[in-house]
Length: 213
Ligand SMILES: C[S@@+](CC[C@H](N)C(=O)[O-])C[C@H]1O[C@@H](n2cnc3c(N)ncnc32)[C@H](O)[C@@H]1O
Image (cartoon, rainbow, N blue to C red; front, top):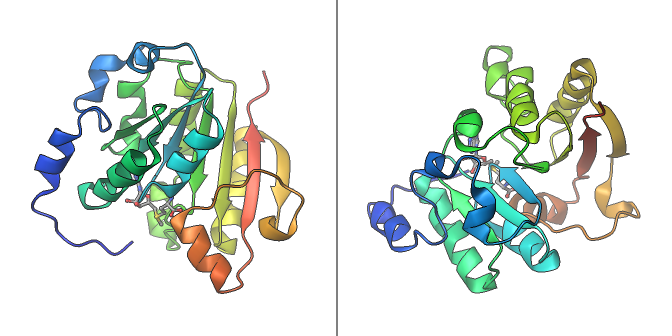
């Protein structure tokens, strides 16, 4: 993702602290109180500019969504998307996903979405891939060993890697599509990257992988 330095980003995030939660670890184990209900909490890791999370929040008002994005210069656009949507059931966190277990208690989350995650094709960068075992361990912890990962990508290499990674980790694949937009899957909410790749005619790969204990 192309990023421009935005010197105003810190102030903008502070002004919108009702959407972008600062110091999120203070809410570990208490996220339902942040939303003021007991609805399930789903997170998207690598939210980018926020189109997916805002769209999902409107489509599923009975689910609470938390978008996690590393870069301030990107998450500011997600803040705007959430504001425009007026969805009350979305929060954003400007953190690295490797902090997940500092921010969420075991079992506090019910689903993890990964959309168009950076592919990191070089072998020496494998640990940065968000479907690597080290990240699966973090998701497993906050999911409490149940729930699911829903993953979409345009990148065939990352998709193949992820299917293997999920299977080796012991996850059960309950949905696999090699061409999501030509499949009968209903309720798809497109991400910014998805729109871009779909416009070029590229197939979108999608998998759901579940913990079954
Ligand atoms: C290729 S973009 C895709 C954005 C969006 N999901 C979409 O489909 O349009 C990947 C995003 O993941 C974020 N990201 C990558 N690694 C991350 C991490 N460890 N923690 C949080 N965000 C991360 C990047 O900053 C980037 O915004």
